[in-house]
Length: 180
Image 1 (spheres, rainbow, N blue to C red):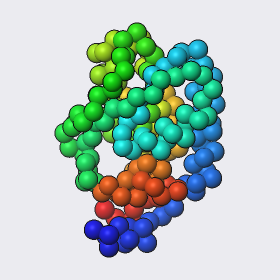
Image 2 (image 1 turned 30 degrees about the vertical axis):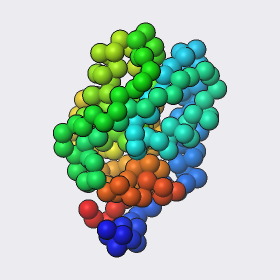
Image 3 (image 1 turned 180 degrees about the horizontal axis):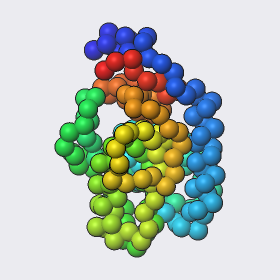
Image 4 (image 1 turned 135 degrees about the vertical axis):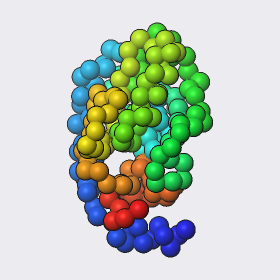
């Protein structure tokens, strides 16, 4: 497996440098601060991909918030999605709370829509979503994010929380795989 990971890294194309990603996160935080400053939200970090962007955003938010996590996966250790697997639900009550879902990428929108519907079912007052990257696809997505950092063409990407078969989440930039 490590040989495959090294080949992926060797052949990858840098789409956004760490500096470009950090600037996008700054802009996202500014927008979130403007809209949610009095919302007292529960932040739902979508594990595992959302851990980097959640951590980076949280230290830029200047209002009271509660942090929790949710883990719903379509990919597992694969490079294509399948059925949703609910691994962890939030411990915090979402009833009558404003929610900010934070995830690494909005791809087809299936996972984000399912999390949104889960929050609705738990009685959330208002639900917002923030994604570091939105993938541009040639089809309509079932949901749109409220806050988007960057946009990419339809590539398989990794870095800043996004993975390739469970690896490379820690890459300090956003890269497109040459082939999957």
